[in-house]
Image (tube, rainbow, N blue to C red):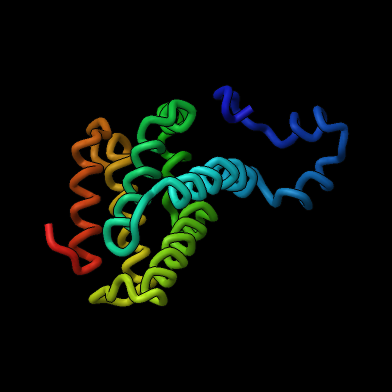
Length: 173
């Protein structure tokens, strides 16, 4: 339903699944959590793909994974449609402190960074958890610039975010 651009109503969904609303709420929590799960179910395979196809290690690897994921997200039409249908709601689901997607994305970045540190490939000049959080916020500022800053997201801004991540990792431009 989400991929088609249809609005998700839990009452309709429980009817379609032929289950009670209480059962559906036990399964998914609420609409925000359900949409967060839908988005994560799309993001996680993309992240796994980026990890698998990005060559090398260290700063170039981290930036390459970051670039692949965020470039794909930038051009993902169902997400663009979701943002344009209800910008305030989309912003809440995508970027708020209660967002399961943002929390999981920060944790996923943290795992990549810890792995690269453990292997001796990078030595970030700052706390890994903070670095991961800043990486996500940089991506959000580019990917959702239409609702955050009133300008259409552009690939050039994403490249600038990649440069910023490289610098935050202690690399040279």
